[in-house]
Image 1 (cartoon, rainbow, N blue to C red):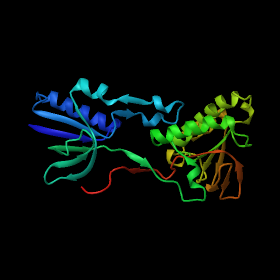
Image 2: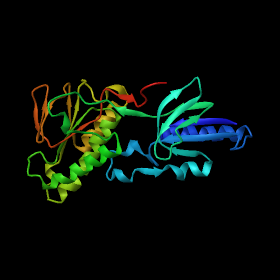
Image 3: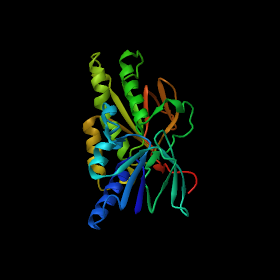
Image 4: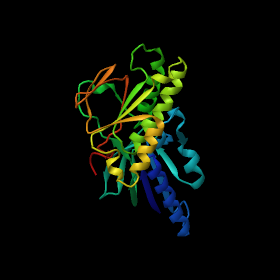
Length: 265
């Protein structure tokens, strides 16, 4: 018997498990001969690229609905260590077996957002990196209707990569729907802040004209060559001296992503 263990619960992990099953079928081997196991801490796969949208709680798919029909065993737990010499991973969790042996191991634990800089008021940053943080942002947006601040329907998005562009353009409508409840659509303002001198610096120059057109059409303001220096619950200070009345600040990690896997191998 040969065992394949896939660690992770996102798109890469699910596709890796599916690929292992396909390889098993192509080799004419049975599920008893090659056991494919996926280890993930949650029973659901979060559709993470869509957490910037309205109702992020709906952006999940039960893993068993995907893995069950193709014959992948699912273990709910977290891998705490990997022993390559012994071909074994340690797993903790309520229904975890404690250890799993493997002949082939795929680490597909994904990535996490780089933490924002430790500026004064860093606790006021929101993000859409995880389901809890996306839900926290949605709750925060809902509360703006009750606020009396001048910046209650103003949002500052820090970072203009793919996620920053998505967050900024979507926030125009998300804030707009809430502003409509108090007849304040004209008060909606979204400001996209980018440290570089161009929008979407890592995207290259090719798509930039289309990006700029889309931002203008959505009504997103662009501030380049600066970043956030300080935040409180009502204002955002940029390091070029600009102050913005804004009650919502979203950090999208303009510096990139960091792997989730840490610890022993």
